[in-house]
Image 1 (cartoon, rainbow, N blue to C red):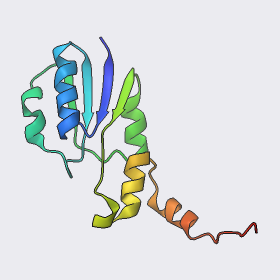
Image 2: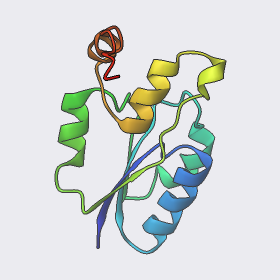
Image 3: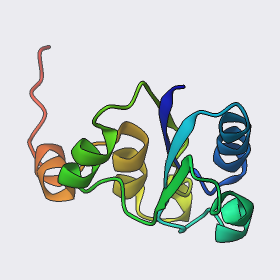
Length: 116
């Protein structure tokens, strides 16, 4: 039995993977902030003893460290809207799982040096 962490687990792909893993007796930890996923996608899994759901933002570093301890596998399906729809920095943070918008923004503000 494997312990699998799925980010974006209440989305279309994540919920289907979670269901398949639960059916093969793996332990599934699902994390989703439900900004794009739906609780309906995983409602049938809630009663499974090998399924755990956390409605959290995966960009909270201490939570992500704690929840991933002991995981044999992590599947990163969490996604954010396409940047043209707004908040491009949040998109980059979620896709790269790098918390700290302020730190990222300050690095963008640094002047680029010309090498030519």
